[in-house]
Image (cartoon, rainbow, N blue to C red):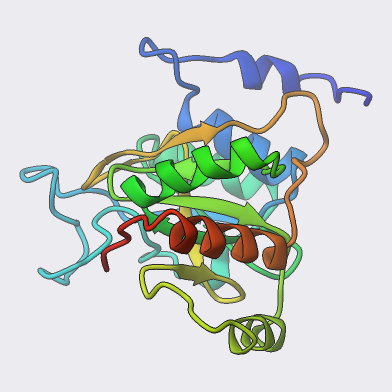
Length: 221
């Protein structure tokens, strides 16, 4: 697929630790892949494990929208460049749903085991986003009705599964959050206009089967 001039230079821009600069990654997501993004609230400068938002009990420190709110998510390169020029260390938050990917997430240990099982079974997955606590498998956009029908048809769905659809969000690499860095466990293939992602039904079927058949512990987190 034809590359757009200038995009490759951004993709290859790296920090000292080998990861891309947040502004370069955010521009790739928004302008090249057409994923709507916005800056997340930062970590507390004095206590990095805490969130800088007003909620002292925030459960996703540094990994959620605050100002601007989620509805401000955009694919406009000029707006993205302005945000990260002014807030260069801000986490990158993807607004899931609509034309953007959705996600199915589960606790990290259970996710690692489930992915090994899926690999052995030959299940094709797209990008997988990982943090120290949870991994998120990106899937095609789905509606609440579609998800409801899918879950209703299941005899059992682990309560630790979370679904990030329309009106939801996840943090994308190379964000730094209160629980540590966000990285690609399965990175998107380079050179594509937008990464391929599987359908939600295939992922939920495979993950539920892997967790229940192998007896993987997936505690609520």
